[in-house]
Image 1 (cartoon, rainbow, N blue to C red):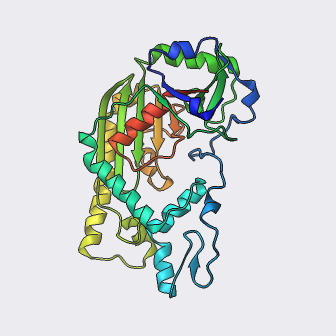
Image 2 (image 1 turned 90 degrees about the vertical axis):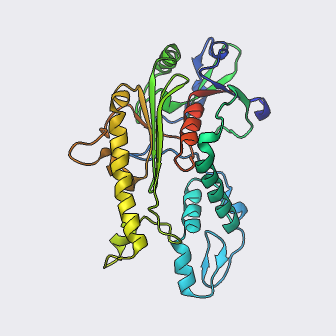
Image 3 (image 1 turned 45 degrees about the horizontal axis):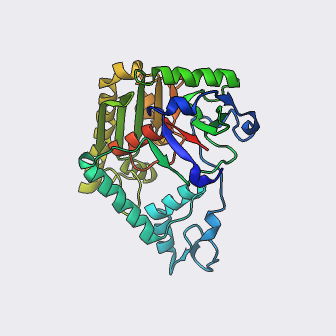
Length: 331
């Protein structure tokens, strides 16, 4: 089927029953959908298209950064660049098989994220239940499971909705779980939590309703270097006493404490949740899983890592993730 005819349909849409009539697991795509997509405590990444090489086509001699495709006049400039947000972002994009960003594109993306953070409370998040989509392609290692309906259309749904990490299950069991989700879609609770070095965003959803949501943001990252103050302190032999460093340390502690207190205030909703979706870097996982009395048990079977490329944590981004996860693709 032509990619232009592909549709993304929300599970809460009234037409969903029509698309899922006569659903059977598509065994032809089993090899394209390995049952163990997740490494331990890692998020799934879509496989590599050769997008990286489209810009990385010029070899620069001398003091260079081959990832970003630039050269330097001296070693100090090169070292400073390697610590910059721009370089670190391009390294992450390379691992995610995305194109590299120029310096202007990087700062433009930061400005867009900041605009989203400042305006998110005033924006209308209403979206169409059915949208045309030409950006998806079936790839090896896909985060989707594939089915066929009575019309012969291929139906794709995120595997994290139907199975745990490293769980071997049959096609019949997958179909049963999908229909259980459909029967309970207006009653089940879904928790989504996002955390990075300076932001937290989370929400609890019940069907199409948002029961609670909250966003926290603190100044914790050093300018230019792009690292948390605590990470910088761990690398240094002495602790800086500057006003900015002191503020960042206090803000890091506030982010951790306020995030933990906020999640604990939602604990009744979270304990009742059918699924818990998490996006959290390894260096921040102690906030949720650490301590003598951790907020969540890391072995909880309900915890799933978000199989999407996400932006900075925000209320709007959390809602986008929920809307995307609880949709199917019809081809």
